[in-house]
Image 1 (cartoon, rainbow, N blue to C red):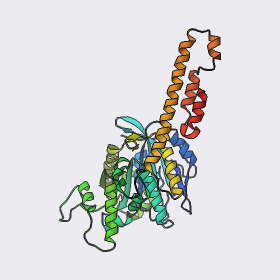
Image 2: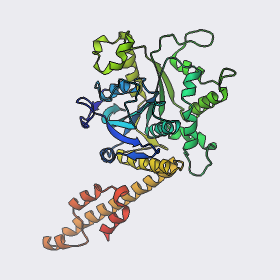
Image 3: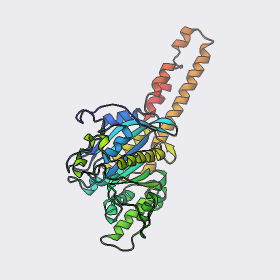
Image 4: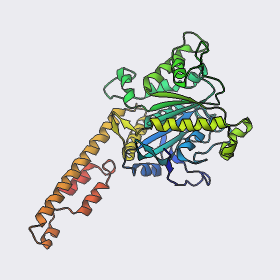
Length: 393
């Protein structure tokens, strides 16, 4: 189950920092993709899994992601109220999924409700991290209470900002299709010091505790309707959901800001056991990224990300089905071109048996194996199918 990190270091992140910039958001709310990242991920032609994490600023998200890269400090842990993760950062690694080693993209996000961000910025961060993931972790402190759902109200905006099916209206029956495209959802409660109990005080398992918390409030302080809309959005978007609790890792709260420098031997045993349980839970449910039942390669993921970003940057609603259909048509077209090339190569081989070598080598209608290999390395999403088809004329 262990993940193996590809040790590619990014300048300026420290000697032990492996995470690299995936995308950033400027002061105007525009998203900027980091092209080095796009090229690296696009080079992954196999099916890819994606784990991302989000949560309030200063809640130790990065420390959890280090579990998946087998390194302390892969994702930077900060030491002040200023969030350390500006935009989205990533590490490309691999993990055993369904019995075979599979490429794994691990994504860290800037903390929500940071001092220098607003609700629009937070909604963009949360939307992108959820859309690209096959497994999404939401990290928060304490217990599930009204404040927890106040902090997650942006999930309602995501339900409005994203359209799954292209032919339905915004916020309509489209909601039923969320299960086909949304990731597995894991809520991690950090520094949880109490037993999980129901409203009668009876101890219950984490899954039941989460489902009880997702029931609508009948009465309460503040904006009860808004909190209930958040609960409904969570249930609508994430059919597969779990909850895990972690105790405080250190007895001395002053040491929490230096977690990446604290020896593992000084962490509380109960916390270390909780981390191993968390890791097992992630790998038990981790799958490759799929849309409508089709697995995505790294190359396909990059195409989808570009479509989402283009839509958000122009004020449009990301349409998941449209973005994926376009990519599928390109892949199907490329596959047909390759089949035609292979047929022509095989035809050329058969013809070459009956004609002199000097004639076959000069024949303009026969492609050799080296030409086929060159075709296979061309990304139709980048070069276009017309360029490929031109070779066959």
